[in-house]
Image 1 (cartoon, helix red, strand yellow):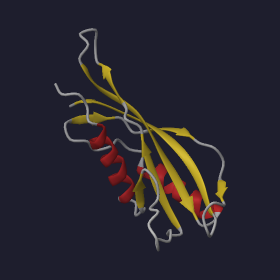
Image 2 (image 1 turned 180 degrees about the horizontal axis):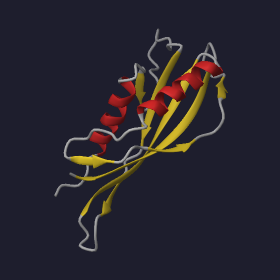
Image 3 (image 1 turned 120 degrees about the vertical axis):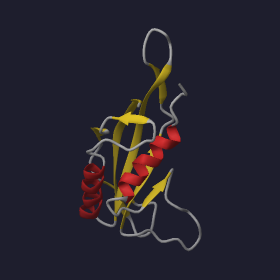
Length: 136
C-alpha cells in the first residue's frame, strides 16, 4: 500500500471550498502588480501531514493533517460569511480517490482581525481543520 498523498487531500479541500462558490488561493493571496483582492475569499495553508502507522506492522498508510483556511473579507461580516461557507463545505467527508476520509474536524480559530498592511484593509479569520483518511 502506498503512503498517502498530501496533494490529493489538499486538492479535495480546495475543491470542496470551490464547490460552495468561494475563490480559493493556496499558500497566500496573489501579490502580482495590479491584482486587487475580491471582497471575500479564502486562503488555504496546508501542512505536509503525517503518514501514520495503521498497526504494529508499521505500515504507514493512514493520513493525518492540519489545514488552515484563512477566511478574508472587506469587512468583518464578509469574513464571517466566508467562515460560514467554509464550515458548510467542510462539514462532510472529503472525496479523495482510493481513500476513506472523515469529515474534517473544525479546530476553531481566533476572533476576526484587521489587516492594515493592505490597501484597503481586509479582515481575516484563520480557522484550522484536521483532515484524516485511511486506505479504501
